[in-house]
Image 1 (cartoon, rainbow, N blue to C red):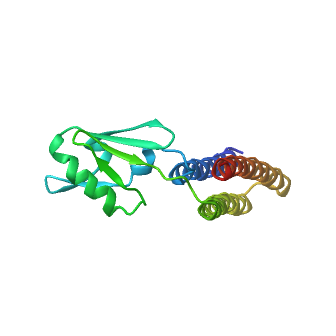
Image 2 (cartoon, helix red, strand yellow; image 1 turned 30 degrees about the vertical axis):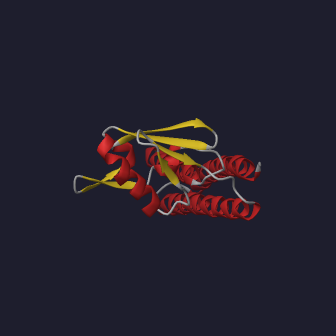
Image 3 (cartoon, rainbow, N blue to C red; image 1 turned 90 degrees about the vertical axis):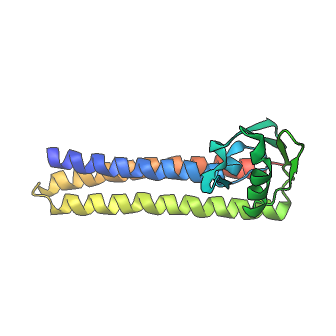
Length: 183
């Protein structure tokens, strides 16, 4: 019995990781509102070392359409501006001598649909992760020495877990899709 509980717990942990990964991926999908996470992948040349922008500057969003980047060293303004342009995020940074201001353009209808498709693809990847965890757990249950009845009961438990996590993923997707498609 302890072995079965371990198998179910491992499956649950794996499914939880799929949900957490999906939530992180969804944060990277822009929904039209300015968010400091939009610049999280930008790397700046900081004295010869490739460094994340968040480690050399404060990034804020004073309103839904603007990002401000305040470097900790004024000498980094040009490097940060160049890094944002090189990152090819579709932003046009403006340097005012003190900080960098980025106006986030509104999303076109076509771009919104593309982002919704991207969110759907990430959702499907998470579902695949959950189904894989289910398959592995069921395989481990079948290999165990437990009676067929006990095996069936634990397979039902794993299926219930799978259904719960799939519905969580669908909720995350529906929320993100609504956010993306809302003008």
